[in-house]
Amino acid sequence: MQHPAAPSHHRQPFFSVIIPTYNRPASTLRAVSSVLAQTYKDFELIIIDDGSQVPFYNTQAFTRSFTQVAGPQGAGLLGFKRISYFYRKRPCDLEIDNEWKSSVLSVLSYVLTFFLAPLAPLLAINQWSKRYTEREYVRKSIVPKKTLAGVYTPCIKLVTYKTNHGVAAARNLGIAISKGKWIALLDSDDTWNERKLAKQAAYIKKYRHLKIMQTQEHWVRKGVYVNPAKRHIKKQGYLFRECLTACLITPSSVVISRDLFTRVGYFNERLPVCEDYDLWLRISAHYPIYLLNEPLATRYQQSDMQSEEEEEEEEKEQASQLSLTYPVMDIYRIAAIKDFLSYKSGHKHPRLARVQYRWANEMLIEKCKIVLLGAEKRNRYVLSWKLKRLIRNTTSVLLETPK
Image (cartoon, rainbow, N blue to C red; front, side, top):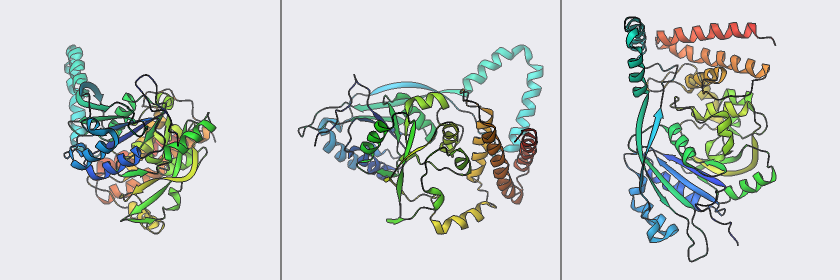
């Protein structure tokens, strides 16, 4: 069997595979092994270790695995290089931690602004220095080379953070330093079928106008395959209205054209969760989602994965539950829809169709009401006030919008 030519420093690879990981040494090694086992070799692999306390690349299993793939020299991960990267992060609009402190600080900031107006330039510089923090990472890479069997080793890059920055920041950095024409995402606790990239490459070459595509997936819970809930069965077409309800696209099954990120933006680093939901909204509003109807990715047990039997019970409990550490997912979906409607991401989106604008506002009201039930039950007065105000404002917008 002839393998496609491997990527080199002088040629753009077809795929850039990005795996963010945090404190998952065993599952990360499993995910990396599934990528290196691909029959299609025209890709680069970028692993982002997001400040793990137990880095997976320091384990003996990792060394043995890479020695088999890249030879004794490859296990050393050649080419250390230190790079500086400026990172800007703002809090989510609906963050509920320390609400009363935020309110007091907001009032004090207005007072200080009035009395310290002559010092405005200095205050602006100070604020900029706080919002932009410099973070450093170490990049290590294995260059492609031909083994004795005549098979090329893909280019492998390992990026390590000193501290944790979140999955959105890790993915964005991987995309920024990648070179491939297509971006293939893989969560560190998932795996791929060995023919996944080969079949997706053939599908892309057949339908050259597509910008994003996904596959079906297997689910594994406690070592046993389970049937995913009906709403998690992958679909194709213009899925904007369906994507408003829940996250219908799995990062581990999707490949995205590189130029699509320049059109709709990257993952929203302000969201600690639901960052993929935010991106799928921006994409599905203007582009069709293509589907390769084969299960080529495997998802392992996660807290947000429900079987058909558990789905109805979960939805009933979610209406009245509000976690103290992270609120229910809908609070971050509310923030994502708000950003989507106001285009806070700073990218120039095409105008929404009138019906899409109505769908988004209707879903915003629905999710606000769900979270409001939990907020009132737990006496979160500031959050309840914010949600009620948002419901009133959105309702008035809907009344003014012609059908």
